[in-house]
Length: 210
Length: 210
DNA sequence: TTATTGATTGAATGAATATTCAATGGATAA
DNA sequence: TTATCCATTGAATATTCATTCAATCAATAA
Image (tube, rainbow over all chains, first blue to last red):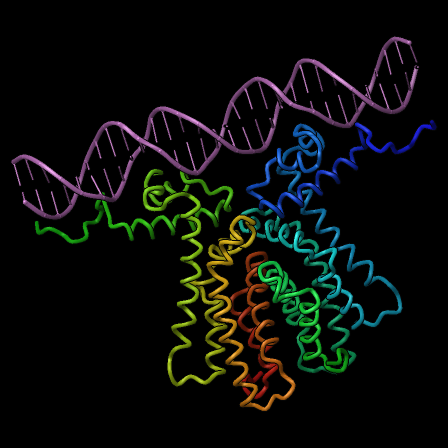
């Protein structure tokens, strides 16, 4: 038998593997039980690891939760950033990609929506959570505002206010997410994306044909 | 000394008074500490009552939280229903009142927003939430759809889809609420209401002048 | 092989918390 | 006044949970 580099079930694994394993388990637990129902014991069981290991790889349960939120935020950011950075895209197309990333199945599965809103629910009194999600929200919102600015200049939409439109988009993003979580039958991913694009079609008819 | 009907500090009070006192304290606690940080001891202290009394007037902590959610939902519903039922209002005016109720200071103070999203975020209460407020949400949404339908008929907006527009409004309502909670400096009540009205102005220019 | 390092375990600990309930006290009726 | 009825209290109980840490195990270096 030749030795393997990656045995099927090694007892030990590099820290990064364990961290991802624990973060994934945390996402599942929060989706199923909410944040208050998410105990270290439940996370450990879900991950197939021991309780002690969670405190070994993360400093505390609190840290594990923060890292989980950071993970989701980074995943979302990567999604739209990768698309938008491609060359040969018009500004309108870039905006279209941002919308489509917002409602990508990988980003807003029911499971992940549940986790996002679990954190939003705590954000009222936890600065940590607010600042983690504000970092990526601001970045995206500023990019949207710039793109919209260019579109306004390009299309001669005299009366349009770029920042206001960007804020409205941001509002629609979150509101549609919430409605998808609460009423999945009525609010689907496709429909949500369509609603945002319809709005853009109203504001910029020459760039987003209806 | 004549006997008073309402002494300044009666030791006992009718159940309804105590219940409201406890619900108010629960709102404050959730806003300050989140649902998981809201202990019966904290609620009792905030209300200036004893722990046992909370379990006496409500069956359990869970019941107290559910009643708190019902209280908020009813308060919101009363607000827009009262305005909309007034006579001599055009359909567009009724819609305007629904928007203004949504962003009324009494309804969406930062404190209460924190409580709403605390409930949205807790998986355990999501079902409770749906059973309590899906009726109320649907009621408002259907009313909006009817009003919009009439406006479309009235204004000859051939291409408009009433249900789609109602859903978009619903999405904006929730999304703007979330953004007001997360970024209070950027999203104010006035601005949020303005954004929804701007959207309506785009869709129905003859009914909602820009 | 043996020693060293670092990952992993889970029982033990202590803190926090929901719920219960026997005792208390104030209001009302007789 | 006296008796009755409830609202009210808060200490006691039982449970749950995060965190710690000494012991174990696997991999790698020597």
